[in-house]
Image (cartoon, rainbow, N blue to C red; front, side, top):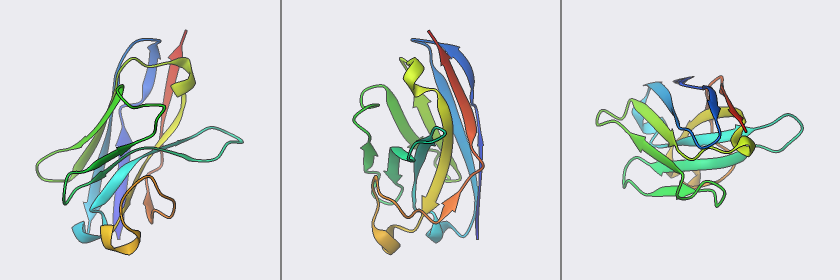
Length: 125
């Protein structure tokens, strides 16, 4: 079993920055593909940024490329999402997700097995 706990959400003005954190625990081989999704009410969940923690390859949605950076700490127990140049349209709930690379590959895909409870990001204009 894998547990994911997000933190770091909040309110910021457009153009500002936030860093989200995701503390992970549980069997490490079940969470070597990790990343961030976001979802607004009534909309489909959107993959934002994913990292293959084995090879280090990262994947980003076009809407956040050049502004967001996903990373992990050396122990691979905490995942980060550095969000710069935030826009009002970035406002929504952000969720940390994890899965095994060997189950369905790693990337901006559906079907992640483990999810955190979410953290809210609000960007004002």
